[in-house]
Length: 499
Image 1 (cartoon, rainbow, N blue to C red):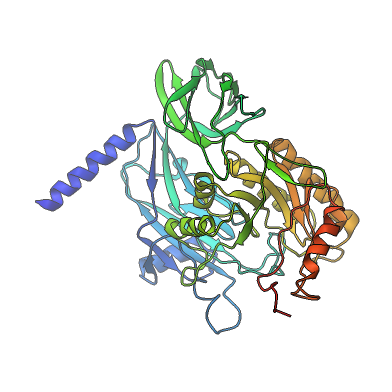
Image 2: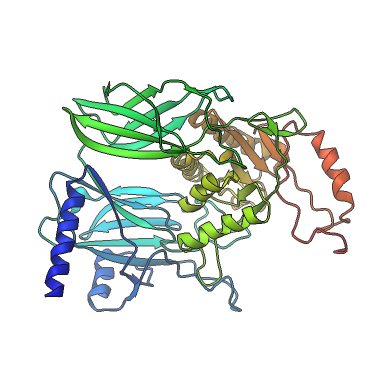
């Protein structure tokens, strides 16, 4: 009797969810895992049928112990993940699989058919499953993830960190209306103590007729403070200027105030989609060759780095541990974090927004020089994904384009400064095209220091050479060389008595 009631309750809950214009289902539980690099989906599904698999929950990596065990090296290969999709399929909905991150290349199959691929780890991506799903049947998802050595995909093998393999972050199923909001970008072109302007860029999944959109703005206390008119959507894009906001509650490291924008999409007066985005109002600048200012006040930046890993978990951390890292940074007095050397879990950006940490978000171009057309296409694509999906986070002030990019080239001539500078300028221009309101940066590539907005040299007094006492003099010397200077690395043991 209890099982019947439970089944009935699940059916009712599912029916209610599917009746909503948008619902998101968490898919982390009860996956099947096959640690085999075989490329054939039929062979992989045969292994599943023969029970050559183990049951796991996501996030997951097959390298969870490799960074802490005593065995040299770690597995750089591929594995398979399987999941049965048991929900009823509504022919009037779209079904989109969203992976927050899979390292480092992925192929997604639905009922033995290839539904989509993604190149590059550390960023989220979506795969539309709708056309491959069968009504009245159990639908089989199979995902092949590969962290094998591929010089055409950053980061380089020469990078000094583990490239964990697996579905290392959360997975969700989005159940959407046929016409739905695909992306919302919120810009704040003018911000001061007295007023703030807000521009909303709306991207729909496809052009559609008869749609209208309306935006509502809520302050940090949940009060509606502004709204737009209901605007016709002419194609698949729409830009709306919200009413000017008077005396905005500013986002800062001391008071990380967050606003919420609600977007309502209607067709013939009926709500077909709705989404909410958090963002913040702030402005920042450097004095030339001098101090940093946030919201007009000088701020001494005190920070640290963060790698996405933990003993026993590798890179497949639960959200609680992601957030705890940010909480500990705040507890020790930090107001800044460099996400080294790659974009990180969405929970990190959310926590930095909410707790008040400035973020240096870094493209995973770490060492290895540059490659040819395929390498450049993949690298540019990763940058575009990184900026697009992290755009609304007020904590992010800097898009770092890389770290030690010239060092230990993977390709012949990959450290040629002329070619490096040409491509670095393309990345820099693309960054400003996608986001004209933040600064670009790079660390330890002196030949391109004048291409980006902010530069970090390499100063390791008391670590690789010299003594800690040299650090102050070296910092002062470098302050005179770079108009916007932030120092990202100095070494954990650069302290009095180390040498």
